[in-house]
Length: 115
Length: 118
Image 1 (cartoon, each protein chain N blue to C red):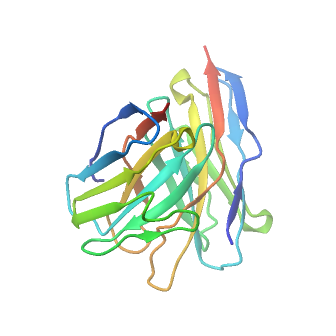
Image 2: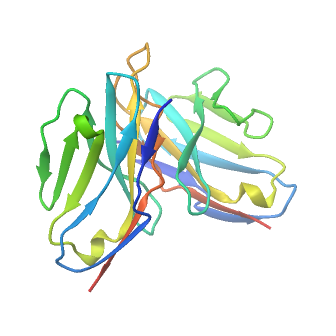
């Protein structure tokens, strides 16, 4: 399976600021996704990061709040904009390395605390 | 819409005990995939198993075994002779195949925190 590196692994940010999370994969992957895991909760898909085009967002998530880039098949960024304490979560990058029904693999996540 | 229910929020066992984590799912699709992931305290999600809706054969991998029963929409996970290193949050997840043949959108359960005490 692919090796997925996320940076930063954790951060403490002030309200109103923005944080960009990077996800680097050691091989080209077909699909890249961003998930959020709020404290004590399950994982929720934020968006699909599309290579060379705008991301596809799930209901409840918008580009202005969570802009995503994917310039190539191995790299993506997620920005959490104008943060509030409610954005405190673990943000996880995930990839699908194969076609069709191959499983998703996840990075180590970014633990974000907003004060 | 898809739904995954993990009714057990927390389970605590003593080392060497067997433990079963329950997972019940809902979907109207006839083709779907079920997954189990492990999230240790370090935070990363570790893929454990994938099962498609047409394969009800139970699977065993070392101390891990999975029981898939479509009749009850359940996909339970058993750890035999548990060890302290098994302590983690375990997530059950469901995906359905879209028109493009991909199953990327996982619906996760809320997870079960398993604590194995020495």
